[in-house]
Length: 75
Image 1 (cartoon, rainbow, N blue to C red):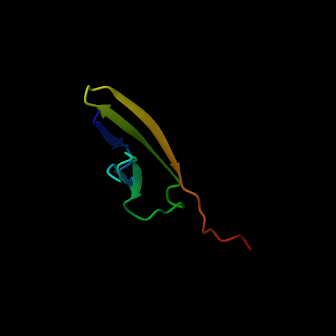
Image 2 (cartoon, rainbow, N blue to C red):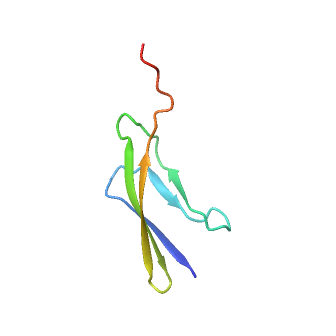
């Protein structure tokens, strides 16, 4: 069955896009569209909607938590 994927978010500054045609394994990826700034936003939420050719649909809620991996230790 052919699947249609759609990423939905209410966040206008959502810095990711959905990549659906990565390889023949039908894997999906969230790809950055702009740099992340954890001190500005540290969590993003979205919903992945999947629909097949018979109009059956499912959704998955996704929370992305940004870690500050290059943070300096306090002195």
